[in-house]
Amino acid sequence: MYIVKNLQFTRLYKVDGYLKEFNFRKSNPSPDGRCSVDTIDARGNRIMFFMEKTDADWKIIPQKELPGWVIDQENNLQEAISTILESD
Image (cartoon, rainbow, N blue to C red; front, top):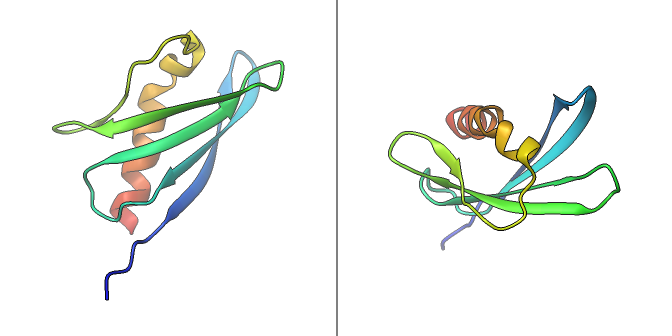
């Protein structure tokens, strides 16, 4: 029987003087693959994007209209994913 583990966690980061909540979800138990991330902007609009495992790090998959403040958090997001997956 094959069991798919679903990892979900949240991290808070200070962005432009405000705390922003980033929600992570990874449904594939292998260290390779994709992780979905979502957060909200100042107006309450949900921003959803994916991060993908490269050779050594997790990188944001480029997409249209992704705010600069999200891209600026890439190192923090990468660290959060790596930390959770190593402890699993």
